[in-house]
Length: 126
Image (cartoon, rainbow, N blue to C red):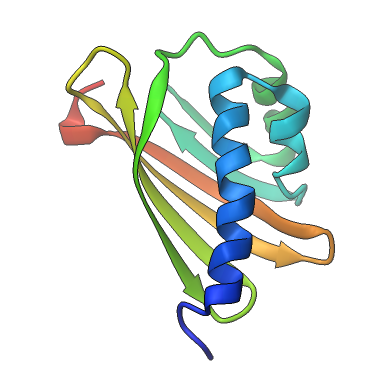
């Protein structure tokens, strides 16, 4: 297995940044296009936990009234040619506190898709 292959790092980065932009803009179609539809899916965030596929569309279709966040440091770790984790700092606009996000991406025939995500408040503060 090759770790940190530049080609896959670049491909994932090219998918990750539009995903983050879609999250911040509440662009529901764009978010949906970058999330893989599977029978079970996990999304744990501040104030919500989603474990099943049927819970996901209801989450995605409701505009979020979340504080606007800026993308801080993002670390993409490539494992082989089809599995990536992305760990980011999401900095809240006008605050010194933010959230820490971990996304798991898998490469499918139609591109890189998120299969799992977790957002936790930095330092336990939300």
